[in-house]
Amino acid sequence: DAGVTQSPTHLIKTRGQQVTLRCSPISGHKSVSWYQQVLGQGPQFIFQYYEKEERGRGNFPDRFSARQFPNYSSELNVNALLLGDSALYLCASSGAGTGNYGYTFGSGTRLTVV
Amino acid sequence: AQRVTQPEKLLSVFKGAPVELKCNYSYSGSPELFWYVQYSRQRLQLLLRHISRESIKGFTADLNKGETSFHLKKPFAQEEDSAMYYCALSENSGYSTLTFGKGTMLLVSP
Image 1 (cartoon, rainbow over the protein chains, first blue to last red):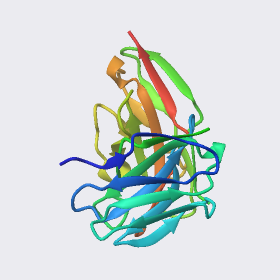
Image 2 (cartoon, one colour):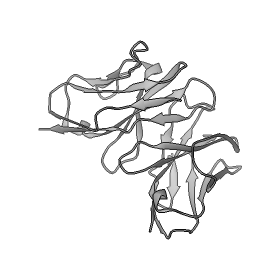
Image 3 (tube, rainbow over the protein chains, first blue to last red):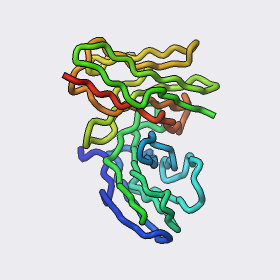
Image 4 (cartoon, each protein chain N blue to C red):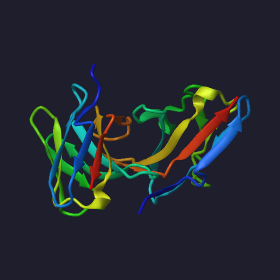
């Protein structure tokens, strides 16, 4: 099993640009969540998708959006990038409809906004 | 609103010493509690969850609802335990998400 895979691993963007981050969950996992981890902080919840529907949204501006595809992979989009969006973006998948079984995390995408 | 507090940014101990990483939470309902660990250059991974009542790599954690705590303990620290540890909480319901603390860096010296 390849685990949760994320691409790209690193990314440098300029303020005002748009970025798309991608995530493939563990085979059979239908729930995908996105987290933002700023240096020195714990991961902060952005979105959760289950069966291609948004099931939860954290306290992030509308510049952040996401979607889940029929194969359960997911994309996170961030528009009008700000310097403060620089962070490690983590994707996590879960094999159950709830988080009670614990999520499996990917290695993340390191986004740097300059 | 739910919150997870890890009061120590850094905990430094010698090999063989006992370790206790503190975690306190704030949540009105009945939460699920987890400990995640991130070793150097590795991805965040689940260490243990309170519902399993398991011991992983010698670590245990007991949920104390009265004190709203979920401290992580190990009687004898090893150098390979050096890592970043995050306490996390999720609602005991469907489609729950994780709320993380800020993490504690554990450094075990020889």
